[in-house]
Image (cartoon, rainbow, N blue to C red; front, side, top):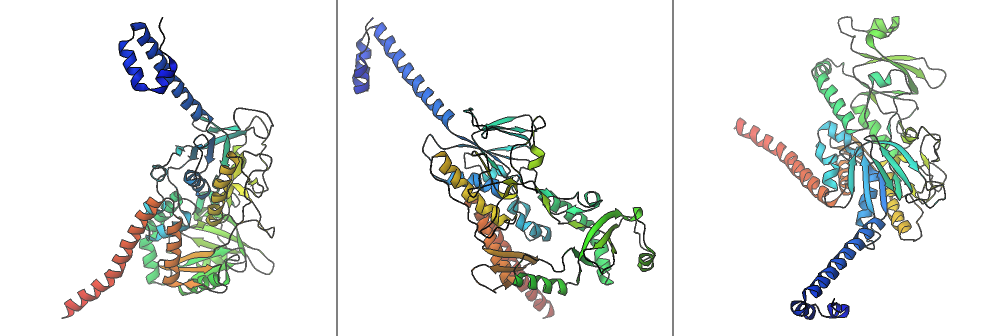
Length: 479
């Protein structure tokens, strides 16, 4: 058999082609076999390259999880080191929670603050799974040369092996601390919660308008502390008190809720019975029994049509413990993963934790608050430290930068206290504009920011023109 010299094919493809046209059938067969082997080897090398790529599994698609995935996507990677990123969340939408109240007021639309993950990740290599995590099986703490660092089991039955894991599971409303709260109170924590509250408010609107005409409409806010917003800047607290007072909101301070029952289930006291309207139907109302936090105060009973529950949250990590063996991820008393300053879970070099799933203290030893601002900054560091760990570079310690506090006080009203100026609080429409601009910058992906920015600009223009149109219409009708 005549074999085509290997060096002639590598040196000159044109010369090899001419030789193939003149050589024998056996030589042509040898050439085709060689070309086939070259292509097979090239495909095999590509397959091995894909298999060598690290696998990063991110559990939870809130601020910490989604922004970590986007951060990983934005970094520059060596060809064989760019990870395969999987994002898992039980919802199909990312929710920008700081703007949930604006959704309730009709100031923003659902698509603006709750875009679908599929839209946000359409121009990335991140794979999204709409599923709920059932169990975590990490093995990076065992010190063995296992092919993976662990496995995530989903409720659908799917098993996802990973080389690196990011715990970013969002906490849920804590309704089990007061009897009756889970049955009769409405949490305000998710997009679905906001829709339920909106539906309930719409149902009450006719009665509410009637009560307002008779000056009977009342909003009451209950807090166990003697002041509101104890952790907020003084300027924000003063602005909130001023707005609450102008809207005749009653503050019930120094009390905690002991029990919540339905109107027909409660035993109404004689004192309360005397103050109740005998003509009103109280069978659907909700009764809150209040206990004073300090001595010297008497208990109270409050009757309400709707109860919004904003007391605390609980992490979900303890619920992911395998039933067949003890949990080996270190958790604090609140159920959050203990991390070092690089956001790695202690004892687990291949697991990072951010947002509601992590516990970290500032330079003064105080626990960082479970806020979007903290999760956003943690995601930036987690993404970078994953890049550093995969590329054998030193990891950076997380340093939280307090940028200030922002709060909404109603439609087109807010209070903003930036950290770079002491004592300055932007209130009213100026504060509202500053807050929305800050959140517009924080929205995920450039494409979504542009769409939302255009939408808000058009709404603002329409709202500005509406009073002028009304004034002109009145002028024309009066002329």
